[in-house]
Every structure is written in C-alpha cells, then in structure tokens.
Image 1 (cartoon, rainbow, N blue to C red):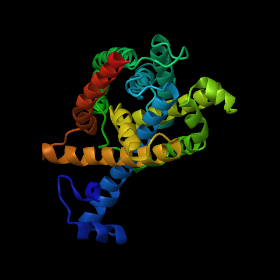
Image 2: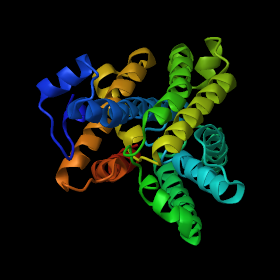
Image 3: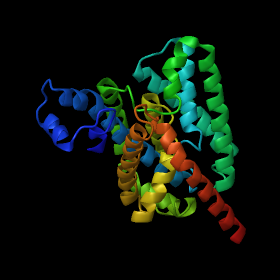
Image 4: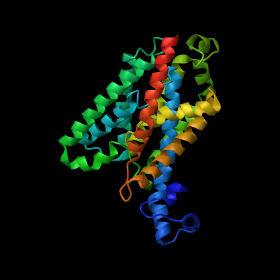
Length: 313
C-alpha cells in the first residue's frame, strides 16, 4: 500500500483503495494502475527472487556470505546484457534474459572455481573477497563499455545501479512467468537442500543425488538473478541480508527458510523503493543505491564475525 500511495504526488490510502476498486479515468486511478502498481509488483517479485536466490546460494555452498552479488552472478548478468546490446543489437527482454543467464553462469562459475567450490566447504572470507573483486572488475568493464557508446549511456546509467522506475506492465508480464517457474522449482528441492546442509557424505547416505541438487539449485540461482538483473539492473545485498534475517526467524529448514526469504526479500525491496522516493524528493534515489547503503555495513559485520569465528576455531 505504501508503494502505491507514496511518490512525487502522495495519495491518501482511501484514494488508492478507490482506484483499485474502480479503474476509471481519474488521476488517482491512472497513477496507481499505470505507474505504481506495476512498479510495486516488480519490486515484490524481484525481491522474492533475489531473497530466494541468496538462500539457495548459501545452501549449495554452505557459506553464510554467499549471495548472487558476491558470487559475481549479478555482475555477470549485467555484462551479458550490455555486451549483447552493443555487439548484437539486442534490445528486447527475452533474449536479454538468455544473455544475462550466460554471463551469470560464466562469471559465477569462475568465482566458485577460484574459491575452491567442490573441494569442501569454501572459506567465507576468501569467497567474499574473490566475489567482490570479480564483481567490481566486471561492473567496471560494463561501465567502460557503456561509456564508449554515447547512445546507450543515458539508458543504462540508472539501470546499472538497479532501478524499478520506468519498468511497466510489459516488463512485469515478461519476467513473472520465468521467476515464478524458478521459485516453483526451488520449492521442490527443500529435502535435498536440507540434506546438503549436513554434508555431502551424509546427504549421499540419505539417498540424495548431491551433484544433481547442486546443479539444479545453481541453475535456479542463475535464472532468478539473471532475470531480475535483466528487468531492474544489478540490485545488490538483498540476496545476502534477507536469508540471514529469514534464518533468524525460521531456523535452517528450507521448507520454511525459502518462503520467508521470498516474503522478506519482497518487503525489503519495496520498502527500499519507497524510501528512495522520499529521501531526495522531488527527485528519486534508485533502489539499488538504497539497498547498497543498507547492505554494505552488514557485509562488513558478517565478514568480521566470520573472521572471529575462524580465529576461535
């Protein structure tokens, strides 16, 4: 409701409810139905996808600092989209999702390989540092590519930091089936993910095909993140912060963790979008900037805790 009511022109909640009940030609109805409702629903589904993607990334790596952004998946998706746009002239969303998935897989796979994924539990600190270094490198490359093409600079300068503004109903209708399919697949994997948390040997003893679970879960992380990036740009820290908050409420069982991560991710992203509309009014602060301001200090806190835990062990 706040997403529908707050903006350059604030609407009373009564007007919002009236506009939702009767879609007419009034100013309130036009603002709600054509501008704020698609934007808010995008925030809901993209936030849910990023929250679940982060929970999956932490589950398959057994690393509390893993998330799509720190694994380089978000940056790789951005690189795939920008490269495809400049070299192939791709401007429609479906092929952009495919290019984003390819870039996400390449960069994310490189980060995991360098961090020693598959050779036992990965070090939290090394994974975070390698992921941050690669993400920074890839985003720098993306920025240079965009700067070389003056015609696309204005279009991408907001997208590169993550934004929900100017994404309408067509974008929502395009990405919603993809993200909902990815979320549905993750819901079918809760038993395998719970078994992975006990270790590969125990999971195999329970009859879980460890390699297949990791492969499908990793594909879901890439699909969810790449689609979200294609629609709204690389929005950081949601996939890292949300699973920790959900785990504090539900415990480690994925049957509860994943739904809570979806709800909290949606809540966080919509709240960040609403906050961005208010703090620099009449201008807007992009949602990716707001999540970075909130998430960056939390990453430092989690990194410090990981070092203290490692020193204690």
